[in-house]
Length: 292
Length: 293
Image 1 (tube, each protein chain N blue to C red):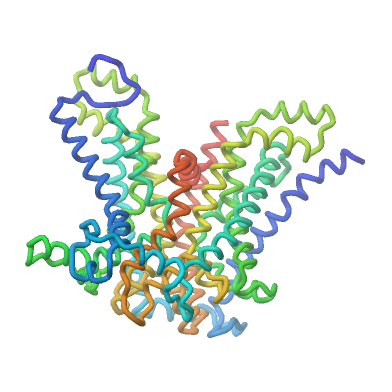
Image 2 (image 1 turned 135 degrees about the vertical axis):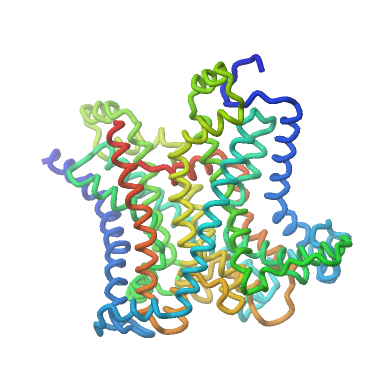
């Protein structure tokens, strides 16, 4: 009897978490999926309209602005963070004195909220009081930097702040990767007379492929989900210039009372994230099983 | 370089070393710059900020902006400062972190030491849940919170953060316990220890590091959350990140930059302190959150 009970205890312990995830994640995904095929406005309703919301969504100028911005932001964010992260990791891997301190400084932005980051950069890049004004004070009268107020350039200021926040994280990932490189390979190459730069270019950096992949997945899903930083820095403006899918979803669902369209945009975001994350997790888990 | 090194340092002349250090210091300045701007300008008067150089240190240090940000400035309709929102965040963070960490430990224990058919599928589903864009759950969650009578309450936010933290906390503990010798668990069982006795007396006493990693991870994530706070809080349950955003982006009145900066630092302070005190564990969490399997 006791043994039978013991057998059931683990399942009973796991059950609440499992049920919670099943309902609050997968059930909710299905419900949002259903709503995206109804003509829900301010409140959810069950009038089925098929894929009409998706047709409408992809016809909306706002949505194409949001997608374009995500493409610009995401590409620059991923590329710059990866390059900068790798570069800093290589620099830090040269037996640097006080490496611990430098690493701590590079990584601290990851500990603070995107809202705080947004506030700092919003005012620092503000032409009235920030960098532009400061340069004028320093005597560089013709200096101009008003990207944050410029419809064409505002999205790039989001990139600046986001890179500042996340590049240290990527640096830490690459540094961990570099520390795992087998020293013997490097020594052998040195014996063969390969220069430092050549060793990095031909041997070490190619060995970082798994780190590039991890960094890519992490940065991509952060980019698709980015919401806080945009809200804090530009609020999606000037005008609609820095609208991204996450801000689009929020405003269509909660302020413009087009819940069906909002739900369909959330589904598109989910598809984007899953198409990157699912293959990655699948291969990671299979790889993990093989190494057991 | 004659001493064999553990690192992959390139053989480099002193000129290269100087260049490396120059670059490293340049980036130290780059990363510290926004923090410096916030601190220095939070100690200036508004006139000094308007008139001058944002990068300069304050001429006459004033703590007035900090007092304003903490207890006096107008946020929304009331002039309460960030203080009540700071405490809202604390009331929200503590139970959410405790609950999700505790459940994560139990889940990890079951998944590694009491495997049963289907457990890997459950883990896969929980792992995938870590990555969903939360926009996908906003609408149904708002409804459920309303149905449970938790809409706009701190209780509701605690529940939301506990549920969406479970994926990561389970992942952390599962990977940690996977390396824990199963023989010890079996031996204790043979001696008659029950499921919970094994958990409390054998697993938990040796889980110190992973508990710290998980608590820091959850604390940072829940404290820094904005989306859930903005969606599900009401006037008296608003967390500090949302209050800060309301303060800075309110369209009425004079823009008090110095108060904004002081408020931003107040918002960042708890997680920054945790990071400085236990950065090693913070980084471990970040790494565990990135490299799965």
